Length: 100
Image (cartoon, rainbow, N blue to C red):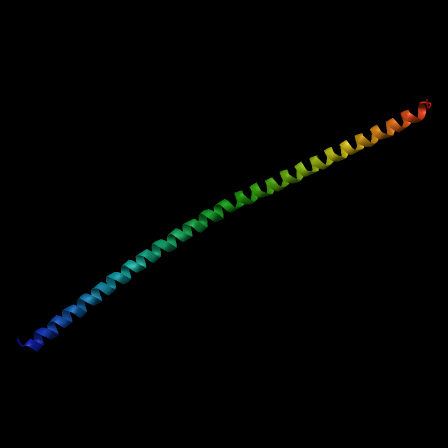
């Protein structure tokens, strides 16, 4: 066998090895990509499942907040009314008492 034939044979083996390594690299990359997409899909599905509960909880929180605000307003108005009634009662009492 000549030196040139040996060189060609070695080069052919290297090219074959590179092609095999490239195919293996592509297969691994495709596997990683599939795994990544599967994880992303699982996360997305889990979020979709939790969304109705989250929305319900948020709506309940808003309703509770509105109820607390309304109760606070009513309590404030009741205090204001009581204060006004007290003032009016004191006015009437002062009118009824003769000046000294």
